[in-house]
Length: 127
Image (tube, helix red, strand yellow):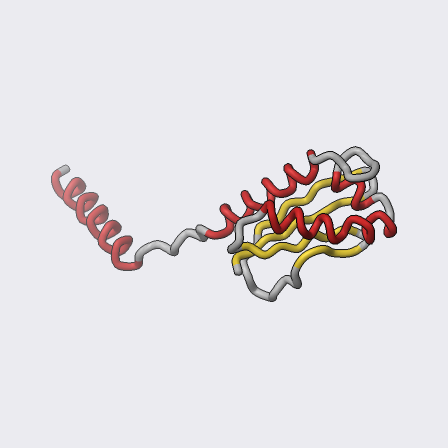
């Protein structure tokens, strides 16, 4: 019985030693925060009153191509004020996009809101 306990003890120590030697991969700390920023911006824009007509600011934006063209600049200014200075954003609808060009291979946070006229996707990333 003592030999079995000693064997288990050696295996436990060996496992801990290997675990410390190899380490663990670092957690992706940016993604959850970016997801939170995108989600918060989506919730705020989804619940804002429209400037002209519709149920919400985002519903107004997706109502038609003409409404998108009319509201594009105002939405760009509103998103700039909503998000921290160290973030860039892109808001995508079926009628077009507002914001910055998304660079390749950057961590992003994404939130999608479904309106009566189609989805609106908000992407955010660090400068």
